[in-house]
Length: 204
Image 1 (cartoon, helix red, strand yellow):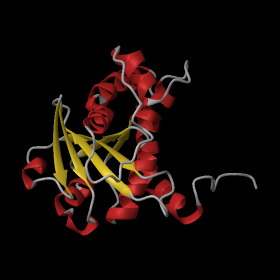
Image 2 (cartoon, rainbow, N blue to C red):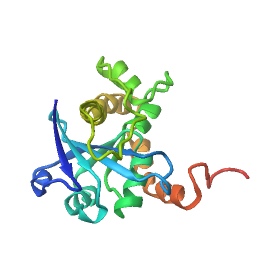
Image 3 (cartoon, rainbow, N blue to C red):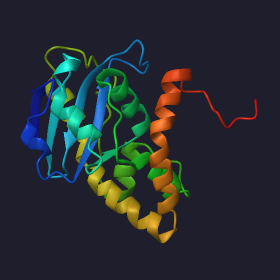
């Protein structure tokens, strides 16, 4: 695994010949109105992770272009949260989404292990650590452990997508999965308008 750190943006060359990219974020917390976006992790599935340390949100033109590019597939794990933070702080709605958590919940109905650690263990026989989850991602200088942890969050998403797609196709659930991915844009808007617990489809 190779980790490359950038400040505020990715180089323009990153977008060239890019078909798909795994994306994750690290934030100061889980409240989009209180806790800022600190780090964006990107990987093309080639064993290289690009970490974008966010210090100025108006200097991220190439990153914004990547997220909005409808021809480049963005692979997330729990896209709902990451998309919300990217929309809140960068002002762009991410297009062309695949979410491994949604795909797992639709494909692997025989288990409740849908977190990233469980997916990597079950589908890839890879163990990952979540020890750095609750650390200060707003620090000016990230530790070696933080960088490696952040990189690991995107390192395996392409492989997970391939494994999950096999099951989705076998169980004839790929179409409903795509409709769920397409709905994420509206779900993000609801989350920012009304909070995460708001459910427009509830009886009450």
